[in-house]
Every structure is written in C-alpha cells, then in structure tokens.
Image (cartoon, rainbow, N blue to C red):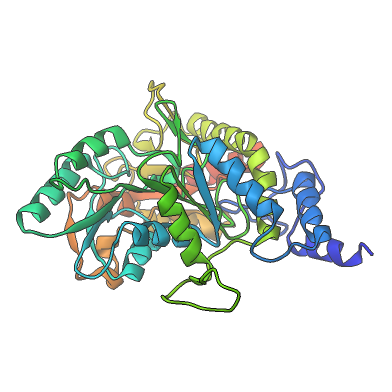
Length: 408
C-alpha cells in the first residue's frame, strides 16, 4: 500500500535526513539555491495523497491560504500555480490592458514583464537606485511625472523586491500619491523574491494594494511551482479567484462569459507549501548565516559589495534568498561574465544578477527611465550559492574558489 507514495516521495527528492545543513548535489556540484525538504514535507504530502484530494482544491489549499494571510498580516490570500499568475491576476484586477501603461522595475526577472504583457498593457521601465538593486524612487517620480504630462494612463506601479530585500514602500507610496490626480495609481508589489522578509515591522506580502509571491523550486520556500496573491481587497481576490478557475459561472452546467485561466494550485503542492511555511524562519535564518559566512570570508578583499540590508540599519530584515555581490572593476580586472564562467567550471553554480528589462530583446522598444545602475549591476554583479542545505565547508569552497579567481 505504501509503495506508490514512497516512489512519489523519491521523485520529489524528499530527504529523510535533518534538513539543515544537508549535502550539496550528489555529483559534488554546489548549486545556487536548491530546495531544502525533509520529514515534515513528507508527512504533509503523504497526508494530501492519502486524503484523496489531489486536484486544485482541498483542505491543504484552504489552510495554506489562511496561514499565509496570517503570516503576512493581510485579510485575503489566493494560492496559485505561480508567482507570475499571481501578478497577472493582480494586474487584471486593477484594469491593466491595452492603451494603459504599467510602470515597473527594470532590474527583475522576465516574469514581471511577462505578466504585464499578458494584459496587453505597455511596460514602462525604471532603473535601480544607487547602492541597491530595488527601484529608484527619484526615477519613478520622473517617469510618473513625464507620463502624466503626456496624458498616458497608468494602470499600476510594480516595484520588485530584489534578492530578498523589500522595497521602501513608504517612499514609493509618497511618490505615487503625487501623481494620478483623483484616481490613486495602485501599487502592486512583486514580492516573488522576498517571502519571509520585513520592512519597518511589516512583513513582505503586506505592501501595496496587492502582492504576488513565488514558491518556485529555487525560492526561499517552495511548492515546486506555485505562488500566492495577497491583499486586503476582498473584491480583487474574489475576481482573481474566479478568473483563476477558468472564469466558470456559478451554474450547474459549464458556462463561461469571458476568458479565464487555469491558475489554481493543487492540494498536493499546497501541502508541501504548508510544511515549508512552518520552517520558513529556520530557512531564512540559515540563509542569513550563509551570507554572514561569505561576508566574513571576503572581509579582507577590497572592492566587493554585498547586496541586501544596509549595515547598521535595524528597521528591515531581508530574507537573504540569494547572496549577491558586486565586484568593483577598479579593484579587480574581471567581469560578471568571467566570474560566472570560472566558478561554474569548478562545479560551483554562480549566476549573473538579473539582466535589466531595458536590455532584453523582447522589450527593445519599451520606454525606460535609466541611470546606468542596473547596467552596472548586471556587468559586475553575481549571485553566490545560498541554499539553506549548504554546509559551512561548501561556503568555504566557494570563497576559496572566488578568491583564487580574483588572484587573492
């Protein structure tokens, strides 16, 4: 009777060993951000299997929504198949569409821009602030002011919480409030990378009219693939829930009066997410320890800057999803391309920071308000292995390999 569930558990790569710390990939490679799962996840997933609820509804879906809403301090949550789906539905909910613009971070993963494209709205890209990767409020102000003078209808502003650090929504809200006239422009937080982080006492997921979270396989907590839409606006969530289930009408037969989407999260994956949510604080704590180990190992090397919470600042906590560094070309004759190639050649997965959307061929015609900050981050910044299952010795190997490349 247990043969099939055990086989499925092996396919999910569930470990029965203590989850923190754990071994790197079996072939000796050190991966960038591998999921960390163990006995608790097995217990929850097997419960979902044995219950018979394997469809995109069920008790684990309901509980996951309730628990995440409570964790983030909002009234409503909707479990979905991806963070992209969550962002898409949020934009649909505020009326983004053809003839309207969505102002968004340029420094982000393509999913943010894709969600805008799904609605037919026009993306307007804004660069990062100096010293950080998150959106620059001054350039945001410039963009909104310019668009307003030109008579462009702005449907939403989408800041992105990059690499685990929550944007300064207090400043963003102040900027947005000065534009838009009688109709306040809604802020939709792309919180895909900041689950478990906080800013001035408020958790990620509680900012903006709505927030979109991601539980992709490499995120700080995972459902393999999944996302959550969070909001205090019950009407927005109700509309998103309706659209996410193919926009089916509440009648005994299958009737649809508009286009919907197949965006719901399965009960099996919600069970996995619930177990990960129980362990979220521990997962964040371990990733923070890992960043501290990197900081200690590279402390004597000039020209290396860490992304994340500013030193000495105690009103925010990033989740340390990925440890990002920027290498000063004035101190080191190397580029992000060369660092990535050298590290990966030794079996250590290192990646570039996001390539800005204003440099992406798919958005070559998009309007952009840029300062060069994101371009510099892409040219000289990388992310280091950061998974909660990494051992201290793995971090030592990463540091030693990076130092060798830098000639230290």
